Image (cartoon, rainbow, N blue to C red; front, top):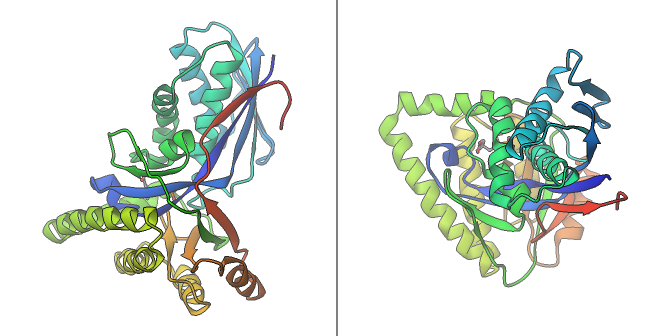
Length: 317
Ligand code: PMV
């Protein structure tokens, strides 16, 4: 019997990078994600439709599929299974772009594989298993991406703790734009972390400020105070840019969104390429999306909040 799982990608609204050093981060599930189909099989086999790659437990596997093979092995071991599994991945998230593609694949893989073999795992267990492959991909991930992919919604997250769900009193729309440039999260995290060695005291106070500003951003988002939220996003972009994780292209995209009338805009995720997010006033998302598209951006609107991982039996939905 086939089981399907769909896990969302994410945006980080505030606190990326600082979260690796103990800050809070505010993040949310988006409407793009990874769809994984799994069934019991005589060995372990993975097919990635979007990457056009496949790997079988017996053959030398392509590098991009190694984390998924690890995830499946760990999941089978955790549930005490001797059978293998065949897993087919379909993701509509661009890879290495800050939208949490690898985490969405990992979470959906754990959820679909365990269900296909008749084991129901808790969200905590899914997160813990998905973190194993995230460590293979990213080195020292905070876990924010995996937690959003599993729990969904809008979360306030601190490394090593379970996330806190944030209730919004009104839907909030963000505009996501992709720079078209891929980069490696682990390289950006290492670059950012170098700052800690060079300026330990300044770094420590920035981590504290990031946490405090993230609390304020959370409060503003929950109460639909978009002006305050936008101001905090702008501040984060300025600091991240000064600390060397933005690029000329990302800075231009942020400027462009502000010029078009957004209240706030920033890079999201590790930077160095990837995506920006922008916050329009209520009722203006569509007009601004069109303006940005006319200027050549691939802007798209996401309406928060959205759900986390979902599992079902049978046919793809
Ligand atoms: O992989 P990305 O671009 O979504 O970045 C993840 C966010 C970081 O804070 C940069 C790293 C982490 O593990 O939290």
